[in-house]
Length: 83
Image (cartoon, rainbow, N blue to C red; front, side, top):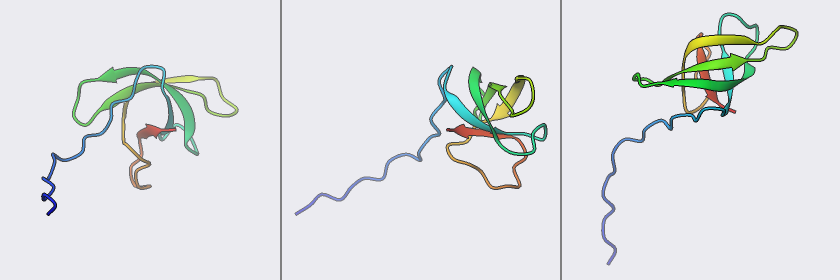
């Protein structure tokens, strides 16, 4: 007989590492753009600081962006997720 599997705790969002490549969506850009995680805050939900590289513009530092484990729905205006 197989043992019943116990239910684990709810999955947690993996915290990004410094230097990790992320995709960023903010009101500053028309479309999501690539960025590098330059800071991680101990807030819930996880928030990060990002150096973004929008096409046709100079790089931009964004001090606080909520981090998600996958691309959130379009109604979320500011978000970052793994590339």
